[in-house]
View 1 (cartoon, helix red, strand yellow):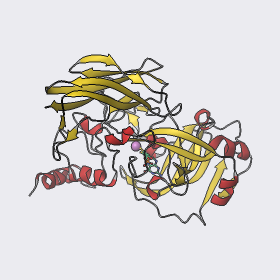
View 2 (tube, helix red, strand yellow; view 1 turned 60 degrees about the horizontal axis):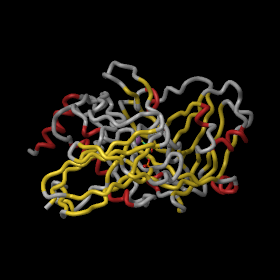
View 3 (cartoon, protein in one colour; view 1 turned 180 degrees about the vertical axis):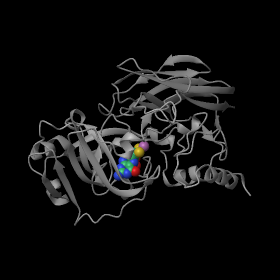
View 4 (cartoon, protein in one colour; view 1 turned 90 degrees about the vertical axis):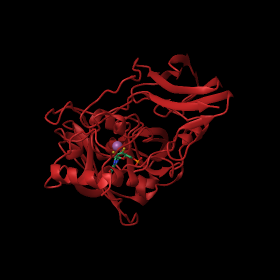
Length: 372
Ligand SMILES: Nc1nc2c(c(=O)[nH]1)N[C@H]1C(S)=C(S)[C@@H](COP(=O)(O)O)O[C@H]1N2
Ligand SMILES: [Mo]
């Protein structure tokens, strides 16, 4: 029996109903994690050479199955604490005023597999990120049309996808505080980089909430409900919380913490991904973003010594910013890293900030290179 199968058995033993959450582990990667990571791919870091991530290179995270939706018969329902409920077809939505917003989306679980002990879920390394231009109707426009009542507190977004998580049968649903929902840049998108949404990214319509971790951007959107009390659905109340332990109610995950990543220089070894680079001048480059405020600086660490990188203009308020740093690589082993700071003064930690669900681990990336 392989190591992975052994591990699968131990996970099943710990969860006799197959429903209880499995606690963090220092053991080898489990078969469940492998299964999730084969479905949900990340963005190869070399894609950061481009301002915009082609859909096939953009990360994907889908909790359940990708629905197969017939856009011709699909409708969006808007209701709850509104003056008038709306039922809109794709044809009707396409006639409404449209905006295009460049947005860096990042999964809140990015960096999870690097934590020790490691929470069992989608085992992202560092690359659960991507940047796209999303086009569609501003959410605030449609909420204005429906007429939000003064008693409104949150807006609940429900997708067409259903499944079971933590033993709870559910449709994927998340809420936003009314204040965030009324922001001018929150969009109900029907195109990604100018093309119809790919099935895995929410066809025919998805929400995109710039600056928030990806869980807020509900795909395969079917209904929008304005509510007068805090939403307590699974993905709001149980998942996506900063918890110290299983018993801690925790606090909700919202905006993306500041992070930068580097395009690993040189060429990789197939199996280990260790990098080999020729001696001489090389332009190190990467991207930095934050949902908290504009990125104000990126420092690049070369064997522990920090140098300020050159920043280019960001693509938008909540889209990544390119950075570069010229380096003269000398023969030997080197460790490269990058560390971003945003307008709130937040900077990336050098040590892991552990939490029970493995949320928002924005610890600085380290790239080992052999210069020969
Ligand atoms: N309906 C629905 N929306 C969803 C999800 C989902 O599983 N179902 N996953 C969320 C999570 S956790 C993330 S990180 C983003 C990922 O968006 P992407 O796959 O387009 O990159 O979608 C969010 N929206
Ligand atoms: Mo996510």
